[in-house]
Amino acid sequence: MKTFDEISEIVSLEMKKLQWTSEPRGLYEPIEYVLSMGGKRIRPVLSLMACNLFSDNLEEAIAPALGLEVFHNFTLLHDDIMDKADMRRGKPTVHKKWNDNTAILSGDVMQIASYQLIAKTNTVYLKQVLDLFSQTAMEICEGQQYDVDFEMRDDVGVDDYIEMIRLKTAVLLACALKTGAIIGGSNNENAQLLYDFGINLGLAFQLKDDFLDVYGDETTFGKKIGGDIVCNKKTFMLIKLIEIAQGNDALELQKWLGISDETKFKDKISAITTLYNKLGIKAKCEDKMHEFYTKAVANLDNLGILDNKKQELRNLAANLMFRNN
Image 1 (cartoon, one colour):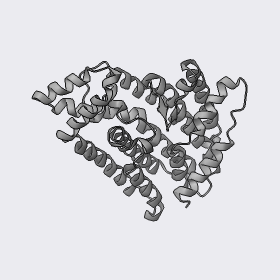
Image 2 (cartoon, helix red, strand yellow):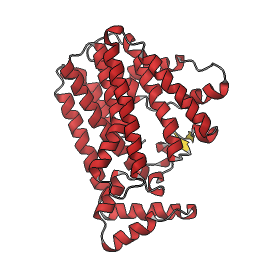
Image 3 (cartoon, helix red, strand yellow):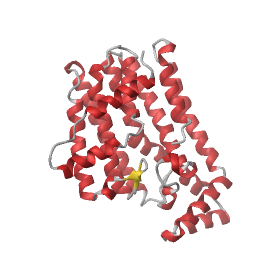
Image 4 (cartoon, rainbow, N blue to C red):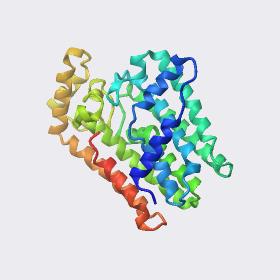
């Protein structure tokens, strides 16, 4: 069994081997740029870790694992346009450094490239892996549409939000794990348990991301703190605040939700964060994160392999749960 660090090193080296040197440079240079930013590379690492639970031969899992990472980064290019995000991993987003059209087109090429990498899967497993990936890709688009729709809705509940982040974030982590398990020769039951582990871990991961957008340190988080508050993004915390706030608190919240003047954004972030603290929203978000984290650990517990083989995944889940970036 390889450690998380050893598999991360494999992923890093293999990502550097991907070539984006074709012409026109205006199409491929942004792809080089976004992939050079690094990031956690969680998806390909999870895929190789899952494969390694059942096989010592990781070679056949590398190309599809990289495909998942390229696909993930493709979604970021398009998401950043929709979210009007200025920064990603501490650097200007592609649509800011170049323009919207470039980000769209370069993202399209990344999506195509991800399928090319997935198609390198051993033919024994190719249909199963490709079907899973295609279904996941469609679900991610569904999640993004829900996210867009939520901006125009006043009736978004917690369950709606959880389903949205399941589709937008969790299914790709689950897909990565199940893909690695399939290629490693897992049986269906263990592959599904790893998929479920990925879903629960992904839900906890996204809730943590939303939490850090309010309570994180900008120097380590890589994005401006309070971005979700500024644009009234319906995160778990805002949905709970709308649900709980009464009287003067509700009036105060509605006042700040109506603010779109950039000169007042700093005050808006401060005011809504104060409401989060006052009404216990911070603790409620932490409790929800822990709920999904506990379910993820239970999925690992039920996995039909030796406990010592699961330890690296346990450690990774804990690191994601308690991270600060």
